[in-house]
Amino acid sequence: MSENTNDKLDSSAPAAGHGAPAGNWERDVLEKLVFATLQEQRAHRRWSIFFKVFGLLIVLFALWVFYDYNTADDSETLGRHTALIDISGAIESEGSGSAAVVIPALDKAFSDAGSVAVVLHINSPGGSPVQAGMIVDEMQRLRKGYPDKPLYVVVDEMCASGGYYIAAAADRIYVNKASVVGSIGVLMDGFGFTGVMEKVGVERRLLTAGENKGFMDPFSPLTEKHKAYAQGMLNEIHQQFIDVVRTGRGKRLKETPDTFSGLYWTGAKAVEMGLADDFGTVDSVARDVVKAEDIVDYTQHEGLPERVLKKFGAAMGAGAMKAAVQQSQPALR
Figure 1 (cartoon, rainbow, N blue to C red):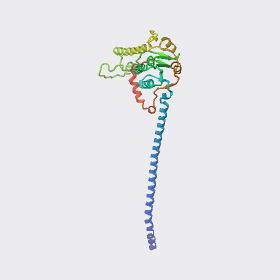
Figure 2 (figure 1 turned 90 degrees about the vertical axis):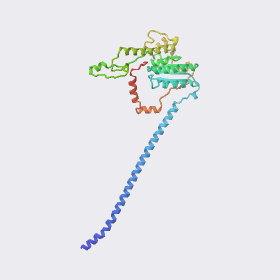
Figure 3 (figure 1 turned 120 degrees about the vertical axis):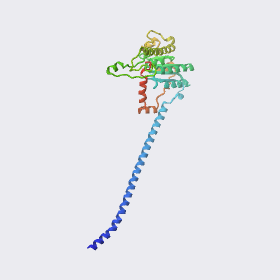
Figure 4 (figure 1 turned 135 degrees about the vertical axis):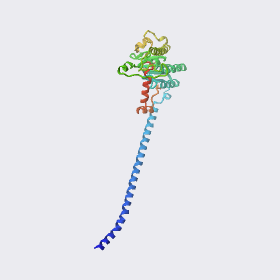
């Protein structure tokens, strides 16, 4: 029995020996298949991401081209026309009321051989005297350089303060009877928190190098000296505003004690006071005054890259900083 048993054990040994390499071979093949599958999946993901990004870039490029095509100047095909520039919203360093946007549009509108007149379509409550002043300076320069091209203003809902500062430099101003016109004045607003700070026990620790460096600090008391200085600045800017109105309106202006007081009036009253010339719209001025019914819009609109950046919040930090810096600046509004 022992010999048979040994024979059986001996006969089974080679089989076990041959089974081990077979198992290793299968495992190696399986591992290679798994690794190949993983590599193929990774490559597929890479190509999928590449094609998605590439497709997105193509879509953005197509939108950009479409936008530029539809906003391109078509004055070459229209021939004789009325040039239109929109100023909507506050007169400030950004937006359609900024000098950086309005001045290039004015230059292009005046220099185009097909434009016979330029119309500023204004709907603004006012804003920065600096931006309004730069636009007025360019309007006066262009009127001298192109004496045969009149510059008109058509008021929409409102043309107040900084908006009227710009309008006064035009040849003629057209309004609606219910438009809001005027507000020829300057203001500087802010808040003072000194009383509240005292009640809650908060101490303001402001260190400056320069006697007046803390001028208009909202957490420090407003001294009589600083108040007088601020009032002097406002009076100076107000006088600049008055000079622009008097120069632009000339003998048409019927001055009263309230004309430069900061009050505003309806369009009908503005015509009576000589702050405006007549009633009209962009279409009626182009048709009846300019005699060129074809209207070409020269307004510089915000481009696609700017809209995308703003959509993702790129301007949030700049907006917060701007609000802090402009808190105590003079404003025509």
